[in-house]
Amino acid sequence: MQNVYAELIREQSAGRSCAMATIVAFKGSIPSHGNAKMLVREDGSIAGTVGGGPVEAEAILAAREAMTADRPTMLSFSLNDNPRLDSGMVCGGSLDIYIEPICPKPAVYLFGAGHVGLMVESVARLAGFDTIVVDDRPEFANAERFPHATKVVAEPFEAAMAGLEVGARALVFIATRCHELDGQVLEWALSTPAGYIGMIGSKRKVTTVFTRLQGKGVAPAAFERVHAPVGLDIGADTPEEIAISVVAEFIAWRRRAEAVRPIMRNMRVLADQAHRKEAS
View 1: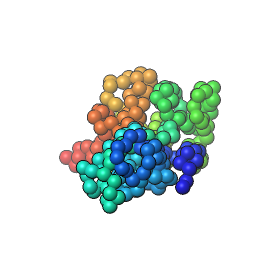
View 2: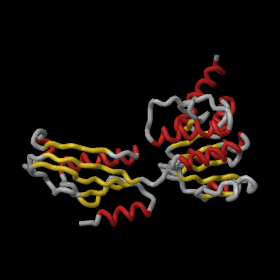
View 3: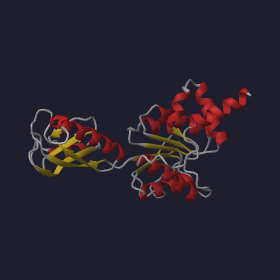
View 4: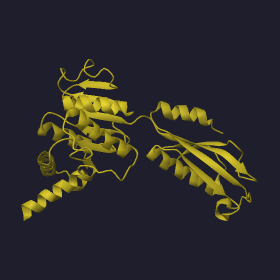
C-alpha cells in the first residue's frame, strides 16, 4: 500500500492540490478500520483507502469538490440505513469521514506595477495569495518597490508572458499603462488555463479592448471568463480602495461565493450591450 504521507509530500512539492480523507468515527462493522486514510489527487487518483466501494467513490468525489472550494467537509454514512452504500460488503455499520483539502496558495499574476498594481499586490498578499508582478519598466517592477512579492519580472510583456506557466488555480490581473498592452496581456491570458482573469478600466476601455481582440479572431464566448471592469461594486475611488474591491473579488472567486455583486459579471455582457447599441 502506498504511504499516504509520502504521496502528500510529493503532491505538495509539485505544487498540486490534494485532499486527505480520514475515518474519524465509526460504529459497528465497516469496510475498513478506524483512522484509515486516503489521499485524493487533483486528477481523482488515490493513495491509500477508506474501504473501497460506493463509500470510497463518494469520498473521492467530495474530496475533489473540497479541493475546488478549498474547504474541508465531513461525510457521514449509515451502511445499515442505506444498503446501496454497503454494496455487497454486508457491513451494516456507520462511519464519518473528514476530508481536508491541502491546496497551494493560488498565485496572482499582476500585469502593471503602477499605483493600483502596487496596492493590489499588497492586499492580495495579505489575503493569502502568492504574487507575481510583471511590468516592462524596471523603475516600477523591482524588488525595492515590491519587497515581499513572490517574484518580480521586469521584461517586455511578450517575453515575460512566454516564460510564465499559469495553472488553473492562478489569477491574472491586468492593469498596464495603456489599452494596447492590456489587450496584448488579455489575449495571452485567454490562451492559458487561468481560473480567474480580471482587467481594470472603464466600460468604454473594456469595450474597445474587446472589439480589437474580436477583430483578431478571438471568439466572443472566450470573454465569459473575463471579469471586466474588475472588482466588487463598493464605490472604490483611490488605489487603496480599488485594491480592496479587486482582491475582494479574488477572494469571492477562490471561495466560490456566488452572492457577491461584481461590477461586471463578465466581459461578454458589456460587449453584447455595445453591439445592441450599434444595431439600434
